[in-house]
Length: 599
Image (tube, rainbow, N blue to C red; front, side, top):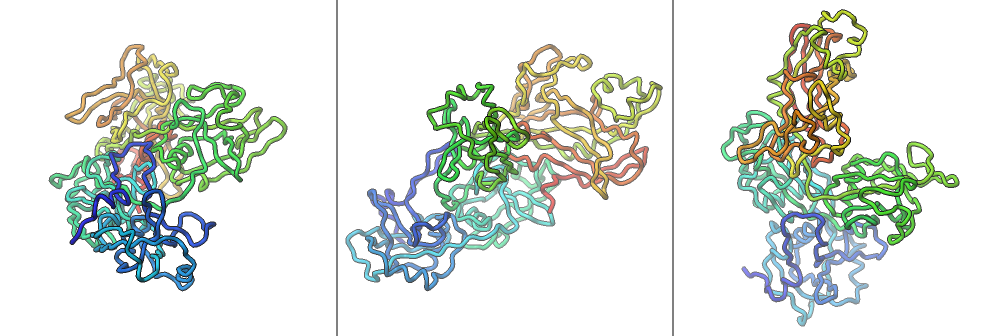
């Protein structure tokens, strides 16, 4: 077995990946597929394999090159599989007139990149006796029973697998690059670029299906590898020794090169903040969109490779100023302000704005149509990109254990009535001794992300509530609904409209930093990483008024950060649903879980 001659190949192939920080400089590209035709669409799946050395690209001689080497090379380029070279592709071999370099490589198929294979050297003087260059026909495929969560970019995040009609995580015990290679190919990407055994992408309350996963590296899927099933108690605690919410198998996969990014951030305080400009039909311009949200900003930051989006920015031409922007009318350094795209709508999972719904701009004189209405002056949009975000996750077992029906006279609920915490029918009742039926529930929300959860509004915009004698920093931090089990229509809802964010409880190694002061103090609300904000069932307004709900079977739904005003690592875990039975005296909930985790 031979290793690479480092004084040559460390220049040609090898590069190290430091800890995951955005934005990061583009990695050196030392391996590529040269398409047969220059106008071939990206990503290139077939073509000549080329390596970069001393400022030039060279094709690789196919002597001693086999399927195993092809598999590793395609994985290195971001593709999970390959197919035999077709006769039409073979015909291009005769048309090359570029230098070929010989490279003696022997791979065993488990490597994550070509530089890990055994090789003697890259030779620039020895002839390529076959006279033929390596052609690759790499293939893409869809993910099968596996997905990633909480990653900022395509091909990264926490690993989740499907089992028993439910998505669950993989414990990071024994997790290594070979197992990550199998997972990446199963996901439809190439081989693994990086692997993590900690909470790199935040912690997770999800069920855990597998632990001690051990792969050779050539398996088709993780379940072909050796593994064990941990003993799972519930969404929050794992009874399996050594497997906790801090030990989540995570990875970064090699993904195909999608080429030039037709997007940019301009006129901000640095290159991760600013107005979004895009190139449409070879013309750079701005986006006009009245409905610009965090979903669209997430896609922008992902497409740029700048991580997550923490803010979606919007400013009208007539207002001129924005906290993150310079004078809008003075934006000339990055080109004009012509609108080239409007009415953008994304679900937040897209890899580029081209995959979102968009429309060409509409202009009538000096009026722009930006999606919602005609307006004087365009509504320009922007984004703030970041390395880290919070991630709200509900303590599901505590929710299940807290459910109770309470009966209270209306005269005891005057403060709650002032805050609209009762059903609409309560407004028409004059008898203060009339009884309201209240479904009480505890909502204990943990921040399992990588950044503190802070109110969306600035402290000067918070509301002082005299009844509770503190500031409420979020109008809608959580929403509670009871839905029909047949039609899924809402039959009752919680009307708690204001929340005061604080660190109610923290993990043993974390000190609380935020509190809900009973003084006019606006400066100290939030939820620290590793802490929870608990709204216990006995708190005022911590209920759903079910006075008008008949007996029957229903669905209880709790939605965290329902309008997604505060950006999170993963919003798919924000909606929790339970089966609920109610007989006008008692209520029982069961089978509570994250809706997006059910298959």
